[in-house]
Length: 472
Image (cartoon, rainbow, N blue to C red; front, side, top):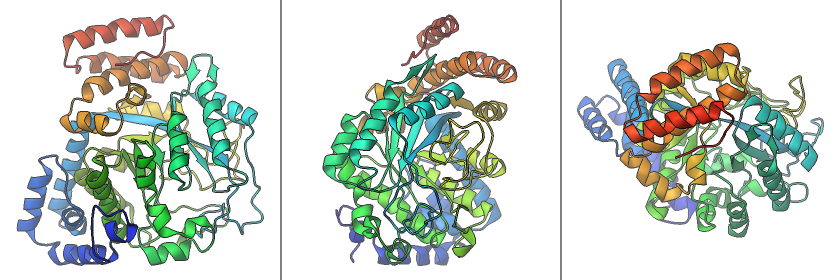
């Protein structure tokens, strides 16, 4: 198929031949220092790189150049997102699924995993448990099953989640990670007030994709890959991409992922709001060693850095699939969102002990949310529970224009401090509160506008007095 970034056909905007040519080109030029310097000079303009240019950087293994890539990725992240890290948690609604995905324990042929679907009362219990930790942002997850998990069920759950106000808790943004669906259903999700629609491609290699999804509606590669176009047609401004690294060759996946981002930008004028980089992990009847495309922690970090350089405006997500040690390494290389205190089982949060029987994958970072917040601040990052852009209508092209110009920091930095203050007042341990108060006092001075600084100080006092949910 001929490569066409503006085509609405997945075989053309994710061209197999173009990816193979790109990987070959990158391998042939990975030691071309003159070319690499030109690519890095272009990257320093903060306008992004093409999939081919970024692939050359990924292939380069010169130690000095790799360190330069890492330093640039870190600086670009600071330029666009400052030192803030947004926190969220996944909420698993149901593990009923009709697909046959070979890497997921929810596959239809798995007859020994307990199947569970939350009632609305159980959803309420989960949300209260998450609110009691301090979470304000969720990503809801459900298997694909038109009988057990129809769109009406998902919409009911969203309504329930938004309706729950427990003590000072409230979920202010619900992102949705469910199977590819129709334009009509995407409109329903938009009308329900979702934040970002997230859908992992799993792999961009069509032949391997069809092998890994032998049965079920997810087998249709084109329908799945074209889902983001339908979501945007349905009025969802913010979409999140991702591949499951380990299913296919990482260089192939990297090029395909960036080509998808380029396609969204070319067709809709808005690239991906987020990019996730999960890796295959052990789960019920799933062994990561069954897949022969695993990548080292070092290459994983390099992929993250190159994505940040190539798509400077996107939010980059690292989940608790990764260990504390890996998250500490990778977070400086462009990450802007992480999950905290995640449970990947259906109904996991309301249980005192972490259940494992319905987990989608093993969680490698088992720290509490308070411990994650504490760690971030000790690492000089501001833990942010902000959801203001979504609720102020700063989505899609409006968010991107602010982000690309750097103006978003005028909102995000003060909002992060105020939501951190809420967490400190309502949920934090004594040690975390002490560290957080010192961080807030220090970071107020980094607010550029004196008027905004004055307003933030006034609102921080009001938060101490019991008021909540201030935002710019």
